Amino acid sequence: MRAVKFALLILTFVAVGVGGFTFGNWLLDRWGGGSKAEEIRWVDEYQGLGERSGTSTALKIQAEPSSLTVRAGQPIRITIRLTNYSQRRLTLNAWLEPYPAYFRSNQFPLKVFILKSGKPIRFKGNATILPPHTKYDFFYLEPGATRSVNINLASGFRGGKWDFSEPGEYEVYLWYETYLTGRSIGLDAWTGRTNAVCVKIRIIAS
Image (tube, rainbow, N blue to C red; front, side):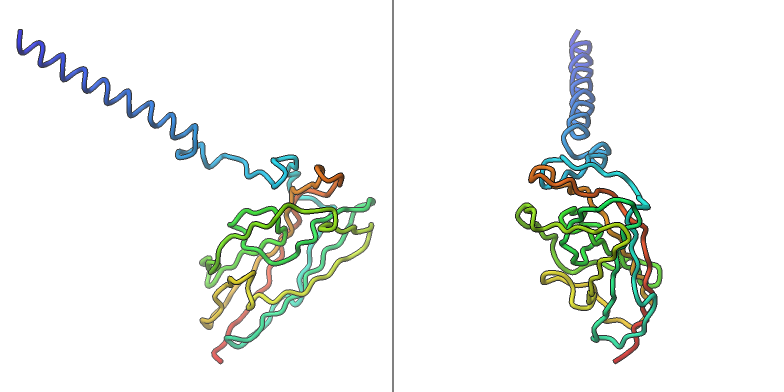
């Protein structure tokens, strides 16, 4: 009889353990720690009023020059051009500062992803979150019109920077991506993602 009670006690502990483990994993998946957490949509500053529309041919990005050689520690200057290829006026997010793509902020639509010898290099700095946009933080791009912006990748972004100190071959991928519609402030802004362009940079010793 004592052996039966002991066996039942062991079975009870096993059942409780398995049940707790299963229920715990279910909670983890549901509330932010398991595989389902990676499927959570990143919402914008207006609580998800904007929606991604995917890659679009309406807006295209170009970068000049397509390749350059720079001494370590020198500025890395690139001109970005956004062109409206559609037949309607586009309302676009004007915060055109180069922003690390993996931070996933849609406040800053000009995304940057950099490889050195085929391996990603990290941005040395923190993600930046600013107060919500106002109507003055958007601009209009008429059909056929182009908006240009000059950037210096060596100077970084708001106190952070990418490390270009080591000589070698770098590939810089840039694109414009936004789903910040501005509907809450009465704007019907363009949402989506442009083509990506690649600028090849060779860093040589100073």
